Length: 603
Image 1 (cartoon, rainbow, N blue to C red):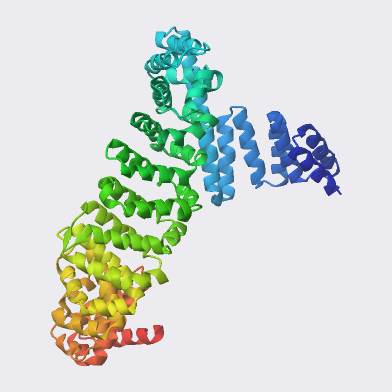
Image 2 (cartoon, rainbow, N blue to C red):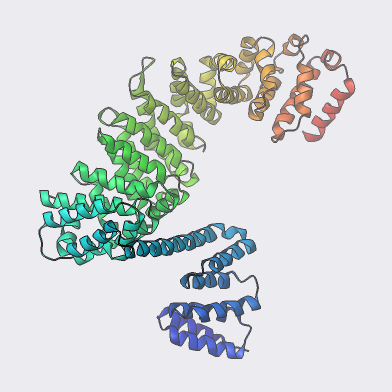
């Protein structure tokens, strides 16, 4: 039996960087127990640290003989094959991991992506060398210019001019690769003047020109080149300095910094690099702050943010300091609506709304008293005396944000429910159908949280307004209006009576029962059932085909069983209230009785 101490001694040596000793300890353990899988995989890692990839692969193979589903062995074997540039074999290892454990999809995707990028890099560099050997003049110029830029102790204008010439020489992928292969990114490391200017605050004309030249060069060498993007962003000085450049007092530097970042944000790999190497919360704050400017920088910053929030990892990282850093800035911007770029602010609000698709972020924002208060004050700024006083896009965006926040019921929403409901109902007079739709949607979220708000809304004729929307609105407004009516019908007898009054013979509800939208049909059936509790309603429906419709709805296939249940319950209430419906409906009491039985069994 193997002594466990040998494994621990091997692990200890590995952690200290003594890989040769680690291999010795793992080997001693394997002499005593040859089928110890973990010793093979641990020794494989040590061999990889010493770049002995053949032995690492051999150890992984032995580990797989011990357990053919050993994911750790396949993972390290894939890395070893990648180091040997055996790209197909490397991919096979990661695909096998995915077969064994589909939950490792993200890991395998990242690993296969790494293989693809490395294979692409090798191919591009081989092709670039071929073109250089063929004597392509532009390619030669790139190398010559890099050599001239390595000359020390020249002034900033000298290096700025040289970098501008180098940028013009970068005409295609070949020049981008030659730039990389000839240590182009070492311009900052190896040239003291360039490094000093780049790493300090730019104040003089020559320094500004040099900084701009660097940003333009990096755009040229990184455009469409993922390996160059990686090398630039992982450079420690660049990583640290980019936020400073974005906050520069020179607009042109800000513009070109964002143009560089936009190259990354256009692709999934580029976005992944940004998220991995930058402080996302800090970037969220910096880019949000650009709504204070009134030129193209604002739209560029918000477009960059829009691309970044497509990535789930960006949202996850934003969770950490959102409530303490980003959210206070956002509420401050909401309170400055009249002094900022309103179109950019509308985009910013929409971005915060999209961030709310992350449940953790949504909870943080929905539980912020200050956030709700700012949103309500913002509505007052945007809508007064039944007209839009600020950019309509801002009003539209903030309603969308509030809808997203109200998905999660909370005490704060209950506290503000009456005020929110009042503002929503005032917006129904807007001539912008998009704004009306979102106002109805927000109302449908808020009314179920507060009986007081609901009763007040009923007093303000919310039922009549919803029925009007149901008669002449699009599918989205119809869905929200039907949900609002269902909330009212559930908790208010007065609302039930108003529905009977304003929807003659329940014509609108009967029409919506036929809807292919199951949410609409289910809520219509629920409301009809509640209306049938009002005396005389069932009798008024004698000359309609209500029974036929309810039978069809309650018997149809539906993903939401509530659709069938609500229809069957309404059918039961109808026939209980007026037995004549049994004979005038389908003409088949047996079918009705069958549904009664179904109701009884499922109630």
